[in-house]
Length: 246
Image 1 (cartoon, rainbow, N blue to C red):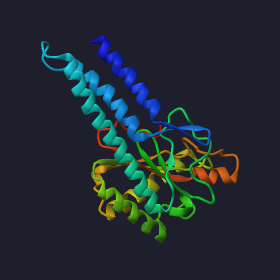
Image 2 (image 1 turned 120 degrees about the horizontal axis):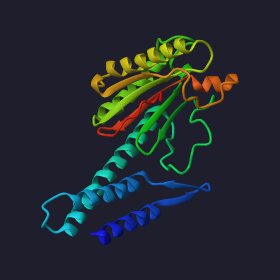
Image 3 (image 1 turned 135 degrees about the horizontal axis):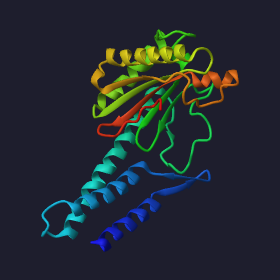
C-alpha cells in the first residue's frame, strides 16, 4: 500500500513538472493539468482508505486517482474557460497567476489599463479601478459601468456552478470607518447590478474591506488611485472561500 501511494506521489510530481513551460524566464503551470494532478493524488488516498477492508486496495487507489484527476481537471478547465470568457467581455487578456511559486511583481491594473482579469489557483478575479465604475466618493454606478457589468453578468449566468464574491477597496485617505462603509456600498452596487442582469443573488457574497490589502503604495496619488477598486472573485462551488478582508 505504501509503495502504491509513493508511486502516486512521484507520478503526480512528474506530471506537475511536465506541465510547466518556460516563458519570459518565469515558470508557468497549466491550471488544468495541475488541478488534475492534485486531484489524482487526493483521489488515490481517498480510494485507499474507503471501501470494504478485504477488497483490493490497489484497485481502489487507481479508481480513486482516476476520479480525483477528473474532478481536479474539470475545476481547472472551468476556471480557464471563465477567465477567457470574462477577458473577452472586458476586452483584456487574462493574467496568469496560477503558479504559487511566482508572486506578482506589479498590480494587475494600471492607469492605462484600469480593468484586469486574473487567473489564480483557486479562482478567477476581475479587478476594476473605481473611476471606471463611480465618480469620486460616490457609490452610484456610471452608465458605462452598468453596460460593462451586464456583459459580466451574462458570462456568470452561463456558468451557474460558481460562487461570486464582490469586494470593495479604498485608499488609506480619510476615516477608516468611512472607507469601509464606502467600499461596502460600492460592492453592494456592483452586486445589485449583477442581480438586475439575472445573476442569482444567493450566489453572491459582498465585502467592504476599506483600505486593507493595498495593491500599490498609498504615499503617491497614482498608488492611491489603484487601491480604490472593486474586485469580483469567481470560485467553483464547493471551494473554501476565505474572508478577503483578513
